[in-house]
Length: 441
Image (cartoon, rainbow, N blue to C red):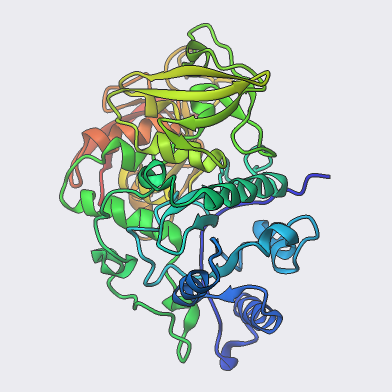
């Protein structure tokens, strides 16, 4: 039976004895003791992993893991306890388990920071073979990742390593551009953190979660009163937003192509179920995460990405055409970073689309109901402006075509600045009224 893994936000390590009764702290302490005693994984020591890989000539597998995240337990237990199906593959790597992003080299470790479990396959010289770890829903991850898919990704990394360095030029674009800051703690909003975990003090509070990196990137633009770039607002677009449904048990194999009245990009490109996507935009693919890496670096104003696929045993060339605004078809509302976006754009309101429209709500146009209204700090801005749970937004800043919460967030953060107030039309108990919502940093 396929063993599925979950994903969510990377975090927190080791609690001092005085705090050992805290369940979260106990969990991470126990994890450290268990992994170090077993010796199969190097624990939270990347320099040691690179040094060993150089001396042994092996590739490196880096597991970035949020220990307290319950959804990751099944996969993580299988990895740490050396799952029988994965053990022979893992033994071919230098294995390192990273449980904190403090001091993480952001010129190398670039990935979807809303994931709480991500894996990198690397050469000892820092060349990236590929990435693994995908999520497209707050709780439902079954269609995105699996241990079988992880095994296929590791097999692919081993193949790339065997061909190295002849393929080094081919792999060059798997490393991204220079980041805004070299390590997380250099971001202005993360300046209170140090480059290492505070083992002698409160380790939990000293840890930088990976989603905080994404939040910090957004804060840079927001504090400069600049619109959030689409690649920041819609990072690592999921292939399904293009109509491309990939099999989580394989490397990058098409399970289904979504059909629609208006052709999806996957339809228009001619993808078919069963296609094995070998390369996209010239990059070899090991997983869905590798597809997302290519999409993440595609221009927001449009692109033509060449895909080489194997179909019925024969090579086929396709072109994935991305029109201007293509990223906006993706969903960002599931992301942990969306709470920061709600603070900025909706004053702490969590919105949901309606299947049925209550009395007073127009039959057409937008209808987004306030499922939750924040009660504290900046997340209480909407509450203080008069918003209540159950209010249905039917117009935002004069716009009536923002069908999803994602659409509203994107519009506000691309078109309105901190300090401005936006007119919001709501329906409450069948009555229409207008409230003024402040935009925030």
